[in-house]
Structures are given as structure tokens and as C-alpha cells.
Image (cartoon, rainbow, N blue to C red; front, top):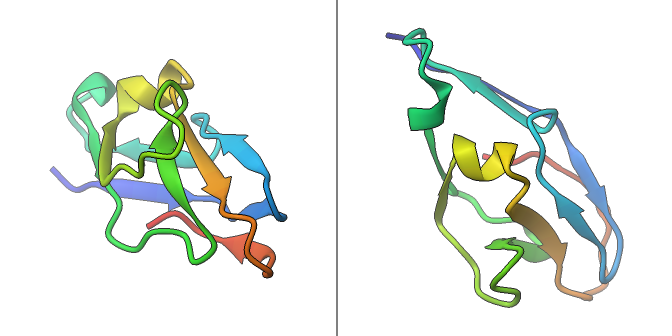
Length: 89
């Protein structure tokens, strides 16, 4: 089926970390099995990275809906000068 992804902008300042919840990336694929959805990070954040909370400093290129539900994934600012809203893609 069709995949629908709604991603809200995340605002981070230098050194911030935001745990991804189902309020930020919301996805459905019409199968009623959200636990099988996988996210791919095609464009990482400009000033930071997406990483697992248990493995700080290690950028990831994919994660699952179950990881988001369990709040295991975060968007981390890299302390460079620059702030603003970025959408997860």
C-alpha cells in the first residue's frame, strides 16, 4: 500500500538532544502493522545526527517504528553554530 509519513520540524540549539517520539515521525503504510515500518535517513540533520540513545556519538542511517515507540532514537545537535527547524527525511 501507500506509505504516508508526516514529520514535524524539530528545533535544536547547540548541544541539544531530542528523543524521537511518535509525535515527530508519524508513518502508516496501510497494512495496520506499524511495528514493521522502517525509517531510512536519506538526508541527515545539517547540524548533527540521528543516533540510538544507548550508542551516543554513533550516527545511524535507519531505525524502526518500534525504536521510535520505545523512545530509543534521538536527534542530536553537534554543537556547531547554527539553529533552526529541520524536518526528518
